[in-house]
Length: 471
Ligand code: SF4
Image (cartoon, rainbow, N blue to C red; front, side):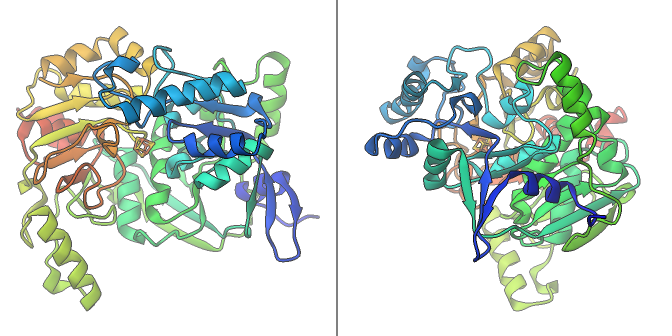
């Protein structure tokens, strides 16, 4: 009898084309996703007169450089950004891959579109020249980001060299998340516990009752941030929730192929006794709504907690890191989390811009007014349309939010949507590094409901108080 295998082992084994004596493995790539930062890879192909190897399994959309003020080329103010977006459309025409371009109602952030269209499927390998490709593991795929030269290699061959098989890690979250505690809080709590190096180079499988009970949207938020724990990829075993989410999506298998696919997908979850190189367990009952106070995703605390005092840190290195983060963020040691001011709010990004995120934020905003400048940026045209059909756009607008067009927007600001220096921004994105949202910008990561609560109070706020009816 063969040894028990994990979900990761099974997918890796099925896609390993050849293993070299030095341990390097050539992997078959199931789906290749492209965004508007892929120009260099296409230049590489053109210079060598190479064709795109597999246009059927290559999909792209512009997201990083598009304007969120309008969804056409003319809305993009700067020529270099327009060139990147129009260049992608030109490459799609030339090479014949599927492209959800500007003006297409399906355009949006590539990590929102993949699952939404049923391009992301259990058991496949999936790559994209973007580190948050880890998101797609939520559906039971092995999905990870690759560099520009690797993008060119995949375009030309639909394969990818990996120097060795990554190590594996299982993170179990037992119990049940409480009222007002979301998937975003769970992943921030995990990163606060294991640190940004806690999963370095590993493929994480999220397991246990909290993830079994979690929606696919929630799993996407969790797997999205695996990279912030240093991991190569994150994944959740496919289950009935996964199949229900995928059924009927445009690029998912149909008819008899659907039945065959589901039968195969049921074989994918990790076998009892499968080995992991590392294992961590958290108690989901103890997780509270979270927010970050510093300049790393591990600088996170429960909203009921306080900003740390560097003097209490156990090592000089840690003391220096905390002091430097507090200096950049303009915060004092020991101040309560709910005393941190918020001057701007961004609800969006590939972490939290799906319909479930917008519904949850709108439920908090209903009948309330934002005290600060606030934006809601849907993750795709289809999310935007669905939200408008449900009247969520009106809730956001009535609360004083700007209702924008789909794109990455203020997550990294490469389209020009920037946070001003010194401004504290409650953001549902995934990175709070120095300058991530603009030079001098101060980012506080949190869930959509916590961001909505911060918008109406002007400071970090325990959303559970608003959910309980506090004005
Ligand atoms: S939303 Fe942010 S993290 Fe996600 S793909 Fe765009 S820039 Fe990257």
